[in-house]
Amino acid sequence: MKIVGRILYAMLAVFVFWFAIDYARGRMEFLYFSEKGQEALDLNDDAFFYGSGRDYHYQNELFSGTFESYTITLYEAADATIEEDVLNVETYIYGILHDTQELQDLYHVDFIADDSVLEVQVVKFREFLNIGMMTNDIGDQYGIAKEAMFTADFHTLSISDANDNEFMNIPFELNESSFVLEDVLTNYYETNESLPVEELTDQAIYPRYVHTLEPYMHVLYISIAVYVVAVGLSFYILFILRRKHLGKKEPSIYFKKEQQKYIDQDNKKE
Image (cartoon, rainbow, N blue to C red; front, side, top):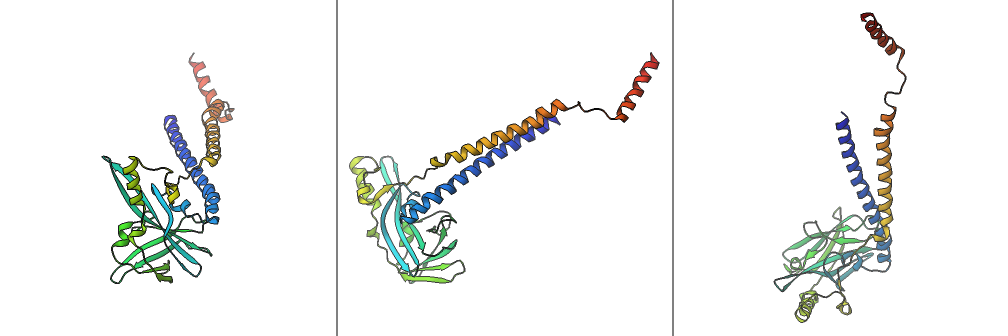
């Protein structure tokens, strides 16, 4: 039983450790986006939100439409990979939804052509930040592939809330000539035989925006410290202090009587 108890205790300690780490990371992300995310919103810095999704992003707008208090803006981003000295650039479209009022958690977005509709969603980036980001048609990641936007001649953009109540219906137009990342990155690679870092910022092309939680590492340290103290104290109480006192309690009077009977019987035999 002692071995089983210690195994269960070890398993519980591991579970609590991962819980502490997960809690600390969640708390760090909350503090980071509460502070830095709100600063980006105040500065209208959309790149803070969509710029971390791909290797490169273009900070000039592809399209922007406004209706009443709502504004939706599309941006270009791209992944760049090199295989056998050949550069491959995959381009994506990111959508940002703003509202001067409080955004809901989910919106439906339709890009409408005469004979087809591209249906995507906008979800709130963080529940405590008033900004929404467009997902792909599957809904499993932010942004949609560039090719999806040119499967038809989309001419209207419609947005509805989660209950399918349409509140935005505006003309939409997007030309392939508006996209710049693939051509600029390819030209740079062919000229320099490497990919840019900060060399194209004068053309509003930036590398991946990296979010860092380093300023909030104290949260992780505090969580680990609390975990160590809690585990150490519980281990001492369960396996050391308890063992020290085990058997030191005064036996009951009934136990003493039964014990004396056996002693008396042994004495008679002698």
